[in-house]
Picture 1: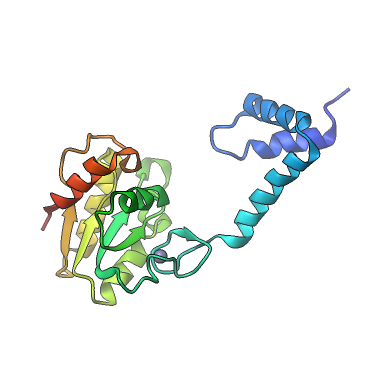
Picture 2: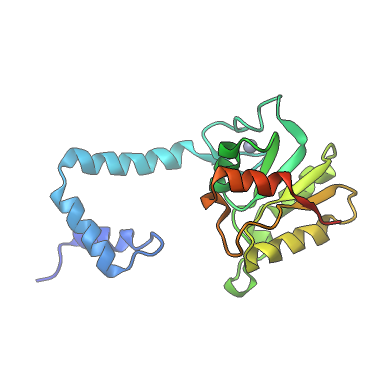
Amino acid sequence: MNRPRSLATLIEALQKFPGVGPRTAQRMADAVLSMDYEAAREISRAVLRVKKTIVNCSVCGIHTERDPCDICDNAARDRGFICVVEEDEDVFAFERSGAHPGVYHVLGGVIKANKGVGPDKLRIGQLAERVREGGVREILIATDPSLYGETTAAYIIELLKDTGIIMTRPARGIPTGADLDYLDSETLSHAYTERKEIM
Ligand SMILES: [Zn+2]
């Protein structure tokens, strides 16, 4: 006798999550089997709700229920100063630190040439467009201080070098390989305040 079809389908589907292989998927499916109907329904509803309500902000790219997002829509934010980050979590980290009065641009990852992630897979073109539209004075390229983060920063610097805007990187002091969104607010604020101009 084989595994019931619906259970096999669930185990198959769960393996679409990153880091979930057959064994983990099996354990997750077992958990579904042992929870009550209401709890299982809550999970499936939450998944669908996210898919229905979340979009990328058409300005900065962050995931939001409102487009433009609250930050891009806030007239008090300095639109001439864009902090470029890899992912949503980095925006939350900067917001927690309270250091950045400007707006953001979420790339949606970093360039990983060896894994098939080229600049075209990220929101780099949209960043260049924002700069070209005018009104931008400075961009702080706050990608992680990792090999991929540095490569991505270098690519953006090269792309925008003739635009006349100021480009900065967060100060050293952020450990190499660190994930920006895991830094405490004080360290992040310091790296921000002491940011270095690149060109
Ligand atoms: Zn936005």
